[in-house]
Image (cartoon, rainbow, N blue to C red; front, side, top):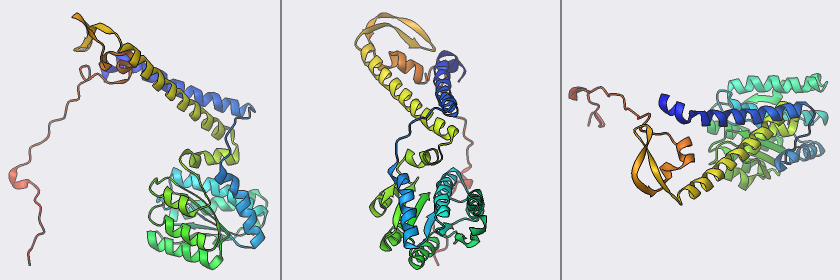
Length: 313
């Protein structure tokens, strides 16, 4: 990467620093009291409505933070959303149920929910059994949660995190008891099932924007707006590159990049994509930093792996 880095690596450094600067600028703006705009997300706006309906019906709110094991950023994002749901439910003295499929998620969830009740001054109302470890087996977990939904007649259900083949089982079961459902999955293959069976679904970046939308914490809000500015910057660079490449390819050139340097051509020729400025800045030059495959050790013939089923008996 040495020669290539010295030639065009500065461009990537500038772009990276620009992205970092945009995020930091917006964090400072948010911390300074600037009210940064975040569009309304329908699924999150429905939280108060769903919890309010459960309170009126005297039925619990059920939450599932996906099937991740161990706890990762996706699970923590789901638990951040659930902490807000729990806060709203605690104010209405409405019971909750949070079902976990891993021991680590169960431990973290129990501490988060306990802290929410204590912050609301309702520590004595926290029920240890409201956070439950069901099982770490996928379909056994789906069956256990489905049975809990049917027995408790949950009025509102929230499915957030990594879901797989169990997603439709959970969503259809909750739908059968008339629950208001808000769901989101980072697994793109499961999102269509949630869309078909749930009332509200967070899609794509909406899932990760949920914490900023609900809590309005300056760092989260500033980071979210800064990321949007970064996306706009990338779009602008792509448009500039497309227009610049198209414009440059209309002419001719008398130089060519060869063997790591620019050389003069005996006569002018039409400009190709590899001759344009943006291609030179972004695309790695194989002549400067060729990819060399490491030598592979030779395996003796008698040690070569074999295929087959073994004994025919």
